[in-house]
Image (cartoon, rainbow, N blue to C red; front, side):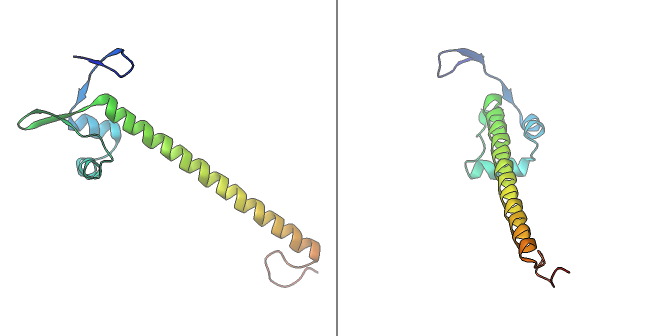
Length: 109
């Protein structure tokens, strides 16, 4: 089955059953349905009265978005940690320059 993308190119439309979605996305059935209920995961296509499948490209897009989100969150956490570390080092240098303990206990001898 071919599908025309918004940019006019034809791509093969691939459908994945739930077990494949679970394996590829790394989440179990209950989480898939919880995320779908909040609109955070692609909805399946009904194949018959008791069968559904997900469009593979939509699931892959969801996975890519989670990776990008994770990477940007990691970058923000690293920047925040680096900033806190820099402030700590400045405080220690100031404390040492004044002769006080950088840890607020006692004085230097």
